Length: 185
Image (cartoon, rainbow, N blue to C red):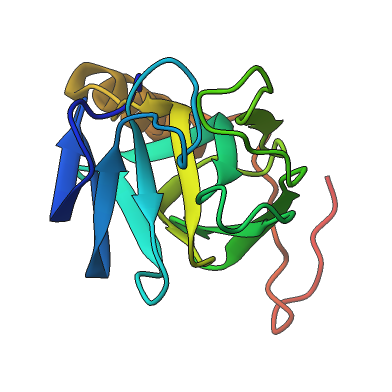
């Protein structure tokens, strides 16, 4: 995800490359400036009161998060920022990663404003993700959408499962009825 294009404008929903980003009180997509972080292109931001930022695939498939670039919101707040990502697992439960930015932001100056963070390996099989931190900047979210198994593969797997439980399965155990005496041989 290379980031949104154009100005600093408020949006209620942003969709890019089949990923839907939303926030209960809107979100911003911004261009670099003297007071905003600079990474050479546009990026997504939340301001105060705009969290959580939620994102998920538009097609309802599961996803795996790999990495993301984060920065402080602006030069007005040049402090390290804690950004919490909570992933919701398809089978129930959550996983969490906490990333802390370095507090270095100089807009279009010579310093590197964005930092790259890598998600832990358990950020896979997610239905959606909440980012619960106000006033941060995000770009270059790297994720993989997990494709659904094809119907042909499901038929093959179903057939193999049926073969393993059929009467011809020689590894099947016989259980003795406790009401009948044991038979020999």
